[in-house]
Length: 415
Image (cartoon, rainbow, N blue to C red; front, top):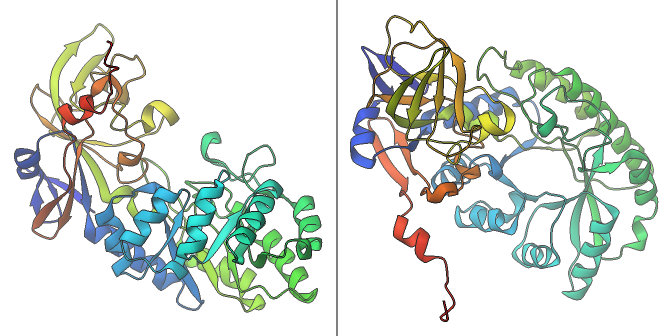
């Protein structure tokens, strides 16, 4: 485990989290390098009988230190904006391992990625394909493309992170994909190299994968027999993690499904995990400010808030809380932040031990979709971020300076 508690002392690898709090204050995100490495290596080992590239989904956690750590493990990058593309390049991820996904790429983003180099664009609509063809023609280039199909498969996950149903904005419907492939010669500056699918995030049931992958494989086989020379198959990401009572998918079974479905095609695979690699590598270190006793609930008010970790407010997401051990408090406890919103919650109705003002707490599972989704609501500066490696910890993003935050606003001279 990345985080442990022993004799009331929270630790990450060989580092006391109290030392991190003393050095950099709270709230602070803390990441375990070993956990990320172990997760990457476990996935790679499970896939050892296949030819594959793991392109980390940068949107999960885009800190440059995290990207550099993964780059050193030979990971590629799955990016959804030109900002993420530049982050991947800055972390020395080879351009031939960068996949550019997302439904709303601008022409400026397309041009920069084409000129800079990438493995493929994952195209999600006919309108996007038309725009990409025009941009490539304008700069005298050929755009490598994967068509992302929407297989209309229910990922059986949270509605807000489901991406493979017909009513979702992602991917091209199957019938449109077939028509588009038939007309691909009408796009002289497009080179169709791959098919792609991604049906959602936080999947712990492998059945939806198996269904979607078979649809993808059937379409790829049809293309190949029709004379199209595909170079790879993009199977997306979405592998889930344990936040609470979830049971993670068995990697060997996942690899078996990939092997059975795609090995007959003889093409290398691209995988795009994000949360799977980093979610439980991270925790949000916070300190209780006040304890408020209600008639039906007890409120622990912390210096971390929804602007630091929005997942509980946005998705009703569960994050474990580590802190003092001992006898449970007699009333259920809500752990909340100081932001002026009723929805500013980090945990609701938990049976927690007695927590006093000033105590250090750790919000678990905060390595993915946490710091990257932060905001400065209520003029609260973004937290610090720290990377732990063995017995050392390094600041990898300083706490946002409050004066710099305010001074970013420009006031017209006549005001």
